[in-house]
Image (cartoon, rainbow, N blue to C red):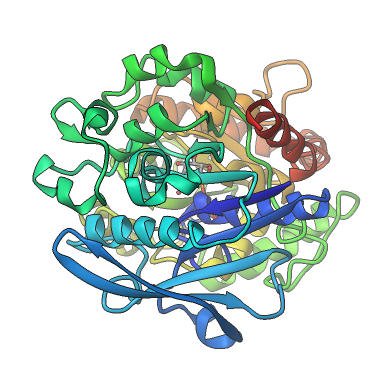
Length: 471
Ligand code: ADP
Ligand code: GLC
């Protein structure tokens, strides 16, 4: 089976969050399982672009409204990632340093999608599945079916995977001329509440829709940033498939970013050495339980209440716990954390920014990982934490609910709470501080969670079932 993944992110080429991790791993494991999976993404100006060799695969041109643009498709030469990787270069539009966050993101990703369908319609063969990820690529099923120029693609089955329904790519109807000449009877497919809504359009037009955990799939019918009714209506073609993690990249016994490697057997000693290095680097007391947060500093992750929750925990525990933050996002939250570094020296530190290597060191050196998320479609951080023997402290939502069992339950190894409130976070930290004193219990929990299987091998079969249901 030939599967074409279309995505805005793909690790290690370009990553802003979990989407990158998933699109960097799923195709690799699909290829290992005997299918042909390929990735198509925008060509940003990344380190990966400059450090690798590329061949030109196709040159074409198209229109975005009245703007005529040329594009080039390049292919990575040696299949370094375990799958064919194609990038689309649109001069002046995609070739920037960041993935998102520009005023013309609508134009950038719409032009990208047009280039993708234009290129694919030039192929002599037809792939079996086009698999689109999130709203940046969710207009593709519509374009394949209802844009006159791409009718050759109309019969290819499509899958849209929703990694996060909070972001939908809304654009006003004044931009409708961006979409290449289309069947005007299909206006309803583009519209949701008076706007063009690419994610809603993808849900309506795709042959199947998946999201990244079963619990999130259920939650979407009651809370989906305005799309609840659509999820209810389309539930027959929707399914939740829990993400895996790339156990070749995330392996504490080999991780090239770690100075001290460890296995399940050596976890206690191994983590102690990594913790020591981390505490030295960030001026934290080694003897205290270390709670960390890694992620985007946004409302979905409850980052807005995290500073107060941590302050309260520092006071309540009389400095018996320390905290380390790695993240970026809301500038107010960033500056609050930066201020706290001076106020709580020895028990608090924060790094504002995106640092892949440091994130690995933190997963390895921490005792507890905080994830008070208001919304968490899957969450990879808690799975990385578990693989590195770090106890996840999570709000019971989405994928967190599907992967973490509270230590109060039979066989439990994590800490769960219900509300994204300062009180619940604080109470959970107290539970962590208490269990940290019980070295045997900590060791048991670490070993238990490190042995949990979250690899992609099982997950690729679930995607295969989805593909087979529409082929
Ligand atoms: P989301 O995609 O919603 O941000 P996930 O838990 O699915 O959340 O994935 C987040 C990914 O991004 C993980 O690989 C995590 O380690 C990484 N990450 C998030 N913030 C940072 C950061 N500041 N520095 C390094 N890695 C980060
Ligand atoms: C999104 C979600 C996150 C999920 C990731 C990968 O960014 O917010 O929960 O793990 O996508 O699917």
